[in-house]
Image 1 (tube, rainbow, N blue to C red):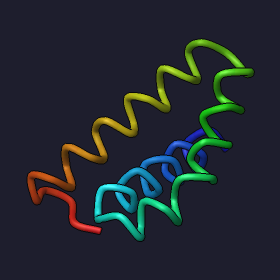
Image 2: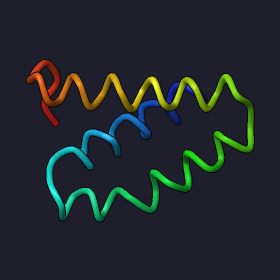
Image 3: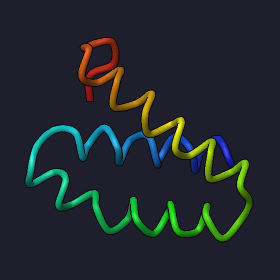
Image 4: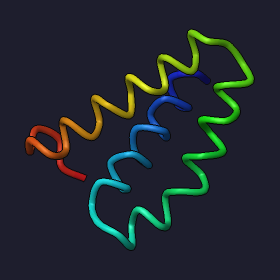
Length: 66
């Protein structure tokens, strides 16, 4: 379950890095996921933030395109 959750968070972060319109689409679900992680545990929130950073860096460097 947590791996799927992290994958979805990373996908939304990758989508948000693609431009203004995709960022607008991904904003609300990403905010809800991060709020849930924040209310859950600190480790889960940190894992989500790391997933977001890794996904955006991988997308921007061309390692993992959308």
